[in-house]
Length: 295
Image (cartoon, rainbow, N blue to C red; front, side):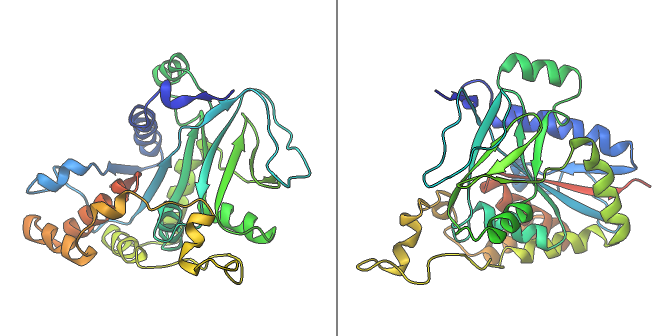
């Protein structure tokens, strides 16, 4: 039986540990970090001095708490078994859901942000406490870019839908037929973000503006060429296991109307865009961290 990490640790605790390690490790390579938190919506300013005119970028993290598996179970129609060492874990990614988490992450990455699924390579609260005390939560985390998931599925001719990510302390695979995925060594994250800022110099305000407009992008989905007989095309989402996401009911007004709310309460357009982007990402369960060069 799988061991559910949700019973051992909260995404908030896990995310806090990663965010703290990012702040420390990014500072070592000359970067300042500003995590977004939703209470900023109620404030007349962002509560800190974000340097929008500095060169910068945005780091987006989708935290995933997986299940530790006792034994490997092949996916239906799978013909091979990946090479895994115990302990190993799994979590699920839905690449089909229109306007869903994966779509938001994938398009944010296309806009130039650094974007990763982040999952712990530990299970127990005791292990988290030890890694937290040693400033090694980030070091003990799996990091996977949405573009790598998309490319592996596309290259294998896999359709979009709900896919399992299986990983151990070294390797990571996506199923149904096990496909090995690249993952970023966590100690390379600060240098990677710094390199991308240096190679693609943009003011932070431009980065946030590009990120905000990426929410309107739509990935081309890989679905069957026609719906099965007797099934409406609009029902394909339920066929592939993608249910109506809860956040859709939270947004009763348009994205532009929400941005306008922030424009009336915050001191600048850049502040409003940062708040609007950060708040929308937060509702999707995605942590945004604004990053700028330290000067």
